[in-house]
Amino acid sequence: MKHYAFARTFHSLFEQSVARYSSGRRGTDHFFSPEEITFLSANGLTAQQLYDYAEDRNNYAEPDGETALAIECIRRDYFLNVQGGRALAVVLAAATLPPKNATVRGIEWLPRLIPKARAKLRGELPASLMYCCGGDRDFFRQHDIFPAEFLSLVWRLGDDDAAIVDWVTQRIAAK
Image (tube, rainbow, N blue to C red; front, side, top):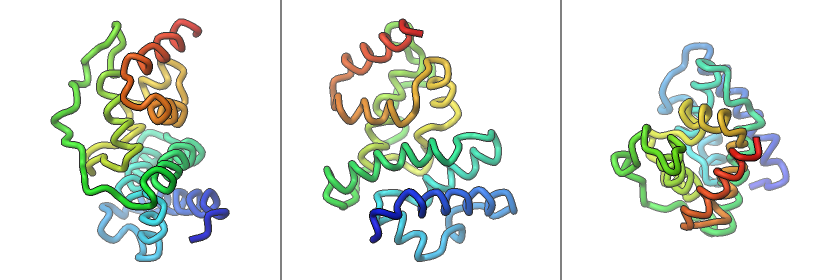
């Protein structure tokens, strides 16, 4: 694996994925070559994650490649340096997430986003969920939070939900 070239390779694959989706290719089964799957796996990523970026980029014009790269650099760092380059066999059960309209301190979506970010960080998101999906992006935009910044925050603060909520509350107050 060429660590130095990760960003360039990821960006190229992101752009190719957007083009493939735009041309009508659908589903992850034949979307990526074996070499591309190897690259993604070696960096703690999945075909579904990149496919989701391509789908949303085509349908909603976001996220852009830079945002996706920033998110995946944090996931990659966690994968390589905390998980030792080993994927976990655990997958978050989507039904265990709080509902989309759940609130904490009057902040909608945050109770759902926190465990979702933890699952993204650990590589435990099921194929049915995307970190930085439309609902997440609405939350981030509304509260002026960069998606990778939030993922990094969740890594730093670990299981301390109250500290995460405090940080978000302070960000909202600072707007």
